[in-house]
Image (cartoon, rainbow, N blue to C red; front, side):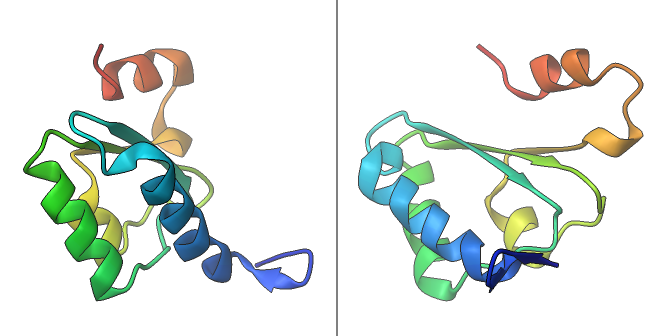
Length: 99
């Protein structure tokens, strides 16, 4: 799949890097990823997120239009919800992202 001139996979890493620069590495930060579940991240990003989790980072993945989860999403997400399989999407999102 493509978004403009870029494949979607090419957009995932820059978006995660941007989130890391904008506060996802801060103590007790949360990050929400909306993806088709197929996105992958390089070892540097996974290491940064893993280290941030020791300081309280919570990572939630909402998957749409795919349903499968890449190894990267499985590694970084505390919770992942396949929205395509949910009858009540609002309730699924509310249940996936605790207060």
